[in-house]
Length: 230
Ligand SMILES: Nc1ncnc2c1ncn2[C@@H]1O[C@H](COP(=O)(O)OP(=O)(O)OP(=O)(O)O)[C@@H](O)[C@H]1O
Image (cartoon, rainbow, N blue to C red; front, side, top):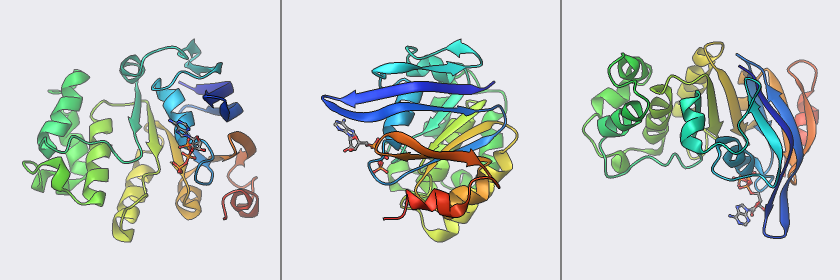
């Protein structure tokens, strides 16, 4: 299933934050959305997940219009979201965090939890520990596991390297690489090297507008970094 975003506009009050944004995530591909702080990346993802209603424009998933669909129905349709800051339940244990996600998606007893924990063995070791006591990297792995137990067709990742120590960045990169092809991935990043090593296609946002886009091998690193470097 393809995700197609067309002519998306978003305002916060009188401030326009997204301007005529359009791009696609073809089935099985990995698309990176790049841009500086404040470029509108998180706002775009909130519109894609139904957390915010765009002022205008459309989002289609497998050809179906989902622009007005609430978040929980988007996730039912196979779209999973790992938000910036991860938003895990700090009071709940690692196991409870993962089980709650699987229960909500009806995948509690179909092996999805074992599959997700196999990817992140540290979560097995920390199973009874409150999520709030994990390190940033461990919380990121927990957030990934929570998304993966829903067996998504599209995984949306908002800055997965933010606040993560270098050794875990490599693990997250390897994990995303291993998921490529099994599901579509929409990766929002500020860290160019990370995005370049994973994505097939790049979309660069600046002040809410798409200022560059292109496939790996077509768009150059200079074109990508021009709008990202401070
Ligand atoms: N709730 C809000 N109300 C008003 N303005 C907002 C709100 N959320 C974000 N903004 C503004 O919208 C613009 C885009 O913010 P957004 O968080 O989408 O950017 P971003 O590219 O994700 O940045 P970052 O990398 O810092 O997360 C910024 O100027 C920001 O200050």
